[in-house]
Every structure is written in structure tokens, then in C-alpha cells.
Length: 416
Ligand code: DSN
Image 1: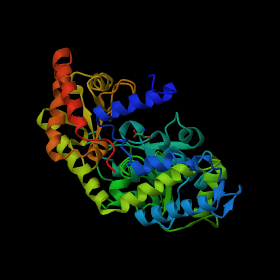
Image 2: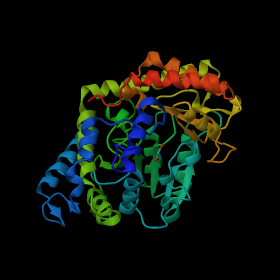
Image 3: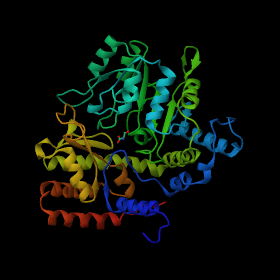
Image 4: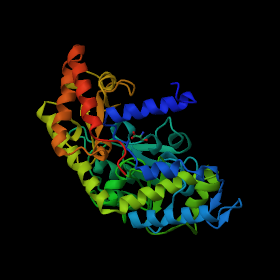
């Protein structure tokens, strides 16, 4: 502690050590490059720049404008979009801005049930999206845990939602955006895809692209996309709502609608990450995320674990731990003790509360960034299985903890 002039720096160092020695399986986390860290830790944080390039409410924004313009340009190129707003501070705020741009309070929105794989901001009753708007939900089929597309169509027909949201935070299968568009077209609903989890995989054409079916895309920038924490809004082809362009309405909704000054240091970090994602090397990385995810799920199955929907198409999957006689909460806490981080997760039709849960979510974006390959996945499953099966034998678990630490130290955090 002595060599640090503030306990905060001591704690940051400890967190760095934690990240270095652990196997990070939280599906929404990743490790950014040195260049992203450099930009988000830069003096750009000093600058106020309310407004948009060339239309700011503060002086001295000349260089900031160039940075934000470049970020917008790279976002549009990466996702083949005609419009991008790079200012949202988070994925939730990106969604909030889209709702503000498209809806009036009380309007009906149709989202993916949170307990089946959706997200809080897709209409959950405890979130602004379910408090301000009249939210209804589709889910997955009990028989196979896949999105019930017939139900989506039926609900859309009956309820006439003004906006439909597709996209998920814990769903391991690809999404059929074409069917969602059919549901939207029944009543002229606006179709929003929240691709926060899968953005990097979609950008590299490894999963279905929401464009041209979805009118608007929102995403975070820090998950598979491997940029700084933040949000992004994209439009494929500009369209009109009540004679106003959606691009205009979205910009107005972000600022002055829901945010003040943009975080220009974060925007610069987004620009760096987008450029990295445009690179061939990133394509290889994105492919490896999926290869590792499929391989991990295969080895879990071999060891008798049940996987929701029986496998994965993307970067994540949910383990149903019911047959292992351990809750998601207990498994999360146990694994964390021994250098493996993941998160408890509801399984569809779970009879446990969100604080306990019957499952854990497993994701591969972070370990793939560390350089772990297909051949390493069996070992990870073995370690997890030994810990869960020997949870009362501290000696065995401590041995695994040490093995994990030594193993992860050979895959450095910062490479470029
Ligand atoms: N918290 C994010 C996740 O883990 O999926 C979603 O906001």
C-alpha cells in the first residue's frame, strides 16, 4: 500500500491482479487494448462538448469535432449504417434514446422476457422501459428454449405494439430478424435490434445481420466489440416518423433529450475499438470466440451438464445446474473463490428467484482475447467440474486455484 499515494490506486492494482490470474467467463466482459485504455484515460475527459460536431454549445471543440466525426465514420463503416450516434453512455441509454425518439409515454412495446434471455431495458417492469411504456413480452418455447416466433407474430397481431425489440443478453442462438420484421410489418411497428452482446460477431458476418430488417440497432461497445464501456445507435436507412427523419429524432433524443455533455475520451476509445474491429486480426478473434464457445459447451455436455437450448451459435450459453444440485448463486460464489468468474443466471421458466437462479452464464469473449484456443476449453471444463464436484474439499479446490493462476499468468492481459 505504501508505494501508492491513494488507496484507489492500490485497489486498481489489486483489481489488475485479479483480472490477470482469473479465468473470466462473464459473457458481457472483455479486455480492451492498450490504445483503448490510452484514449479513455486521456485529457479528452477535460472537455465539455454538449451538442454535435460543428453545432456545440461550448468553444474549443474544433479537435473534439474531428474525433467525434471520425468515430461516427468508423461506426458507419463497421456496421454498414447510414447514421450513427456515438454519444450514448451505455446500452440502456442508447435504448432510452430510441424510445424517446420513437414513442410517447404509455405506448406499447414488445420485448424479450428478461427471464428468458432479454434485458432490463427491453420493458422490464422495474426498469424505466417498463415504467414509462406499456411493455408486453414474448419468450422461448418450453420444449426447446428457442425464441417462440409464432408467439411473436401472434402477440404482434393482437397487441399492435408501436415498437418491437429483438436482441438478448443471455440467449445462445442466432436470431431470425426476418420473422421479427414480418411481425413488425403487421402493424407498422418500429423494429429495434439491441445487439449489445453480439455486435462484434455481427460486424464480422458471423451471425445474422439485423439490417436491412431492423429499422434501428443499438449496442454497447464493450462486450464482443472490445471497446470502452459505452453505447451506440445505428440506422440502416433513414426513415421518417411524423415527417421528421429518424436520424434527427435520435440525435435530439440523445442530446438534449437524455444526456448532457458527451464523454469525448470514451468516444475516442470507441473510434480506436472500431478501427481494431475493422481489421482482419479482429475477424480471427471473433471467429475464435464462437469456436471456443462451441467447444466449451461440447465438453460441458460430455461431463453431463445441461445446456439451455442444447448448445450455442454465439459467444455464450447458459448451464442449467438443476441436475448438479447447486444453485447459480452458489456456483458463482464457489467458482469465484478459485479464480473463475461467471454470473448466476435465470434459466427459462426458472422456479428460483433472480438472486438465487438455477443457472450460470458462460461466455468466451474475454478468454479469447487472452489468447485461449479451442485446445484449452476441455481443461477449463475439467477445472470447473472438479471445483463443483469437490466443493467441500478445500485441498483439491486450492490446488486447482493455483493451477488456474499459473496457467492464466502465461496469457498476459496487455498485448498491444
Ligand atoms: N449487464 C449486461 C450483461 O451482463 O449482459 C447487460 O446489461
